[in-house]
Image (cartoon, rainbow, N blue to C red; front, side, top):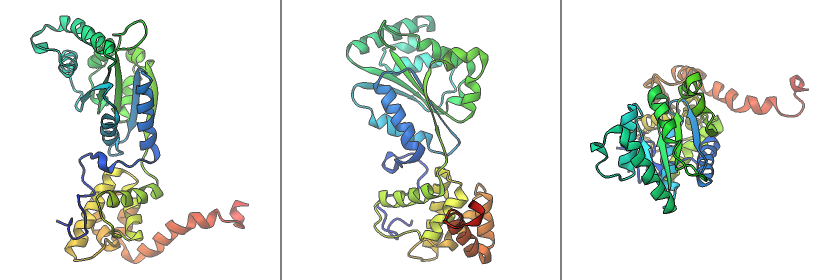
Length: 305
């Protein structure tokens, strides 16, 4: 509803992962670079961990769109599979004909021969598993057996695991220690800093095609505070703020619109809720948040000497 009002070519704060809006900064960039470098050097397991809403899936989508023709990728968005279902899924992604008609005990050999064929063609097969913390233990063990498929010189199947911190707890189980030892690289996606969150909002506005200053500085700062730097929550608050500003007929998003969005979003952080619920203390508190860190670190402050 507000796209034309704010001169957007696309909705800037949608919740569907869209690589057009990938924020190539901070731990998102580090995670993507680790994935690309390790896969291009034919490493084994790679693990990316992050809290809910920190942007794991968009990193995954960016990876899939960045790998070239040399790679064949199989993406599993929901890994709650049985061991047999995992093998059948991999077989289908590798274009193995009539895989569903084969008994499970024969399928592993067929997958191996197909991987050998692809390796001879110079292809590298990558299995990307999102929300990997939901994978049953027996399926994790089946995944390990799949990665045993190799030649004398190289692994035939490379695996990227993306998941919430519970993935680390799953892999810490004593009976899964063999798989944990195969993880070559591990990265953690962290929430954005306040400065990073401000840059994220500006980046999404520009990527959506708007050439005007849609969010005032104080409004963007309030979103950064209330979101705790979680990209998904930033998107929710920014979207609701745009709706509120549009409904009020405003040409830009101000603090009052953001305050409405915060009050309507239960996941907002406590400080953001406090600021939204008490507008009479909003500006003084924002001033403290903005300038106190600079004041404390400036030369001549007795407490730091």
